[in-house]
Every structure is written in structure tokens, then in C-alpha cells.
Amino acid sequence: MDLFFDLETQDPDDVLALCLVAGHPRVRLRAVTVTPGSDDQVGLVRHVLDRLGHAHVPVGARDPGTGKPYVSGFHRRWLGGWRPAAPDGAPEEVLAGALDSHPDAVLLTGGPLGNLRRLLEVPGVRLARWVAQGGFAGDGLVAPEHRLAKFAGRASCPTFNFNGNPSAALHALAPEAPIGRRELVSKNVTHGVAYDRDLHDRLAPYRDRTAGLSLIHEAMEVYLRRRPRGKLLHDPTAACAAIDPAIATWAEVEVYRDAGGWGARPATGTATFITTALDHARLFRVFVGEKIPPG
Image 1 (tube, one colour):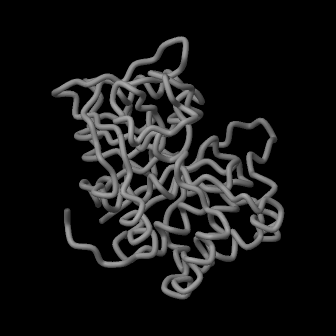
Image 2: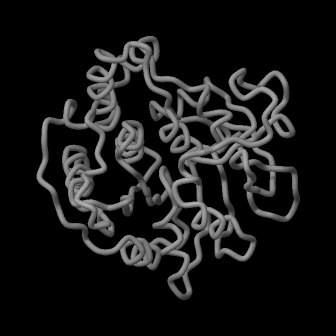
Image 3: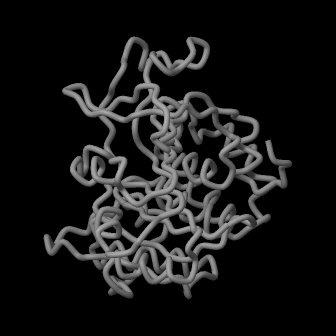
């Protein structure tokens, strides 16, 4: 599958997801865009792409001009350093250009949605499929046996990626937005997936399968030294759902925003779907790049 990835770099797992999709045997990574878009972020992304043999992938960004790096300290502990770099163009220019060559490509978003909104405002642009790490499916959608205790009793919940730019999220979720299908990998499932020492050890036999898995294993060896309890895998889980939607159970919904954050209610004809349950065994097989029959 052809894939575009829009990410942020203040949380470690976006770059882990970049490693996953850049090295995955079922993915052709065609473009990367960065939010908010500092030269330090672009330099980090280029450094990782270069290590993975993907230096040719165009990187789009729009520097907000704040002077802030917007990069987690973990990345420097892991990778050492890199040079700030200029992007290949504005995010909407890079994505629109890539869409001209790959009109059926999937857009995966791992951060606030400003870059997606800029793309959708380009005349004539249409996305076939957008997979977002974000949103929330509450008790009205999730069966009791699949509910996480931390979200029990909730119909809505704040989500960073939508709250980071609410107007852009509402724009992308609107029925008239030029998107064929929206798939939201929501926190009611991603908060149930952790990269801990057990997963690290399970991954070890596969780490030489791809450059991406090797770099993920290297990164998490550094991470687990300081935080042995591990890291929730929000964006890598969303990346696996983009590669193989069958890792999750989906419900067609209408997304809404209220004082409690973001929620979803059952609906038809919206072309918007949200995760309500997760097949953890299939998720792992997708993560490590095993061939899996459709289903």
C-alpha cells in the first residue's frame, strides 16, 4: 500500500511508527509531513529516514517560527544528534504532489490535524482513506468485555490529537470533507497496547527482519532503561490498523465534541469508522511484518 504519514515528535511513539511504516514489507512510504514543523523536527525525520534507507522520501513542513524544537528529549538520548534541516516544501504541497502520483494512497495522522486541513483546502484534492490516531469510543459503542477500566462510564474523553487543533479536526470530520473513508484508531484501544519489557523480549527474534524493527528495538532498549514500565503504543497501533484494518473491530459513527472532549455515536452513511475492540495477536503479527490472510 502507498502511505503518507503526518507526525509530531514531542512523544516518542510517532517516530517508532515512522520506523514501522518505513520498514514494513506491506508499505511503500511516499511522503512524510511534520507538525508543527520546526527545522529540528525535519532534521530528526530526515535522520531516521536516512538510517532506514528512505532518504528519497519527501518531507513537508511549515515552521511555526517559535524557535522551539518540538522534539522529545528521548530522541536525543536514543539518536545522539542531527542537523536541523529544511523541508522539501509546505506540507500541503508535498502531500498534494504525492497524491498526483499516488491517488489511492492512505494518509496516516499521528498528531494535531493542521497539515490535513491545509491539504483539504487545496482545490481538487480528494483523499481515498484517512487513518487517524485519535478520537474516543465510549460505553455506548464498546462492549463491556472490551472496555478499559480507566474509561469506564465515559461517553467522551479529551484526545490530544483532536484537541491540538479542534477546528482542523472538525473540518476533516465534516461530511462534506473530500475524504472517501475515515478510520479513527481511538484511545479506548490504543491505551490497551503497551511496549513493555515482555513485548521487547517478544520482538527480539524479529528485530533483524527489517531495518525498521531493528531501529524500534534499539530505541526501546534506551527507553526502557529509564522507564521500565514501558510506553503506550498509540501511533504504531494506528499504523498497524492502516496496514491491516482487520486487527480491529470497527463501528460506523458520527463524531461529536462536547465539554468532556470527543465522543462518537452510532450512525450510518458517514463513512467514518472508529475502533471498538482490538485483536492483539493479529496486531503483533502485523507489527513484525508476518504475512496474514485477509479477514
